[in-house]
Image (cartoon, rainbow, N blue to C red; front, side, top):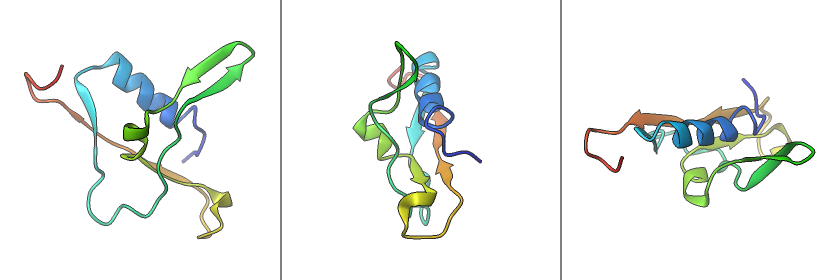
Length: 90
């Protein structure tokens, strides 16, 4: 498991952009203890920025960072996606 924005939020962004048949959904009851995902963009190399999530999308995913201080965790990221039904916002 990684907490790298490039391997988490940026991958979610990639899937949402490249596969319009996919959507983010709530992870389900009992899994709302993490913080929201990261928004904006990150610079991976000079002059190369990668988009992360919108505010709305970031509220759907969850992340636990080791430096949060609230809990002693290694770090986790949760995202649940679902294929849209035919005819649904595609």
